[in-house]
Image 1 (tube, helix red, strand yellow):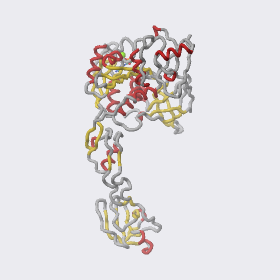
Image 2 (image 1 turned 90 degrees about the vertical axis):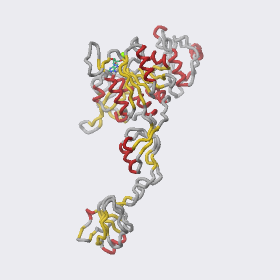
Image 3 (image 1 turned 60 degrees about the horizontal axis):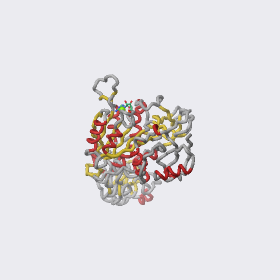
Length: 490
Ligand code: AMP
Ligand code: MG
C-alpha cells in the first residue's frame, strides 16, 4: 500500500514528485541516495507497479529534467519502479522554460515608420528639447502679467503670431494675438484664452485675476535634450513611433525578427479549400498559431501538415531546425502510438515532456534540436489547448527571445465571478471567460457554457482566461484571477 510522505519542501519550488510504497525511512533514504537526490528535490515517494511506470520509456527525459532544473544529474536509473514524474505547476513550467530562453543578438536599422510591433534594441535618446521653445497652449492673447494692473487689462494688440511663426519681442503695454503651438514672444509671460477676452477693434480687454504664467507650455517640459525617450527592450506601439518621431528619429534600431518554423501534426488534418474526407478535420491550429506569431511580429515559416509517422516528423523537424530561431508544433506530443514528436525530437536532440497541472493543455514538449540547439515547443493538438499553452508558455518564451526586457509574463487582474464552480478542480483551470459589466455596471466574469478544450468557439467568444485555482469551489461574487487577452496576445 502506498502512503504519501511529504519531505521537507524548504519553501523552494520542486520539480519532481515521487512516491514510495514503503514508509520505512531507511528505504526512502536509500532511494534518494541511489538517485543522487536530496530530500528537498523530491516531495513524495511511492511505489509504482513497473508496468504502469510512465518514465520506463523516458528515463533520459527524467535525467535531463533534473539537470535542467537543479544542475544535478541522475547517474543511473535502471530501476524505475519507484519514481514517477510529477506534474509541474504552471509557475514551475514557465520558470523552467524562461530559464532557457535566450534573446537573439542581431539587430537592424528600420525607418521609424516601419517600427510598429518591433522590439527596440537601442534606446531612443533625444537630442532636442520638446517643446523646443515656450509656446502657447491655447488660442488667445499673450501678455506681460505686470502690465495688467496699470492698464486695467485693456491692451492694444500689437502683433499676430500663428503656429510656425516667431514674432518679435512683445512691446510693453501691448498684447499679441497668438494661436495654439505658436512661440510665445520674448517678454510675454502669460497667455489669456480667447474665450475670456473681449475684443474691441484693435484692443483686447482681458479679465482681472489672470494667473501669471498660465497657458504656456515650457521649453523641454515634455522631453529635455539628452534624456532617454524610449528604453531598449520594449515592443514599439503606435505611441512609441509618434514619440520617436517627435524627437526627430527617422530610423530606429530594432531586434531582428524572430524566425519561427511551425507545423501541424495529424493524419486527420486537411487545409481549408479541400473537401473533407471521412474522419478528416480542417487544420485550424495552423491559422491560430501563425496568427498569434504574426501578432508578436515573428517571421513565420509554415511547414504545413506533417503525417503521423516518425520519419515524416523527423524530416519536418530537421527542416524546421534550419534557419529558424524556434520551432513550434501542434499535435502529436502525447505518448500514444500515433504521437511521434517526442521520439523524433529525442533522436535529433533532446526533449522533456512536461505534465503541467493545468486544464486545458496538460502535456507540453520542450526540447532542443540539432547542432544549433534550436529550441522546440510542442503543444497539444486540441485547438483550445494549443491556444492556451501558446499564450501562457510559448508567448513569454518568444517575448524573451525577441529581446523584451522586464517581465514577459502575462499579468492577471482580480475580478468577481458571476457563476458558480461547485466541484473543486484537480488541476488549475484556464477557462475561456468574458469580463463584462453586469446589469448594475459591475465587472463580472462569465464562462463559456462548454468547457471542452476542443471547442474553439469558446476562444473566439471570450475576452480572456479565468484562472480557477485547483481545489476551490466558487460562488457568485468570489474574486479570482482573470488574464485579459490583451495580456496574452500581441
Ligand atoms: P493530438 O494532440 O495530436 O493527440 O490531437 C488532439 C486533438 O486535437 C485531436 O482531436 C486532433 O484531431 C486535434 N487536432 C490536432 N491537430 C489539430 C489541428 N492542427 N487543427 C485542429 N485540430 C487538431
Ligand atoms: Mg494527433
